[in-house]
Image (cartoon, rainbow, N blue to C red; front, side, top):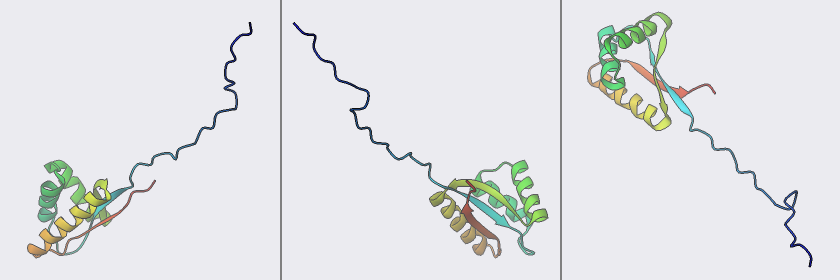
Length: 107
């Protein structure tokens, strides 16, 4: 009697390489300096919409004031765009020209 044959696994199987899943691109929400929006208002918005504590909000506000802009947070695109819209609408309702933008995070 002969022994049963075992399949040769050395090169007979076709394996598909699946594309690697990518994490969704994240976006930075940036506050930009201007000559009219008050520092107090920027701190208020950072606390209300970005849930920063007093110290974090002050640090971000001072960075905006000194460097011209600062990152308030990094989020998925839809969240970042929603935050930009919310803050912009709130600023306009309160007579502030605050500029907030979202841009892709560097890879």
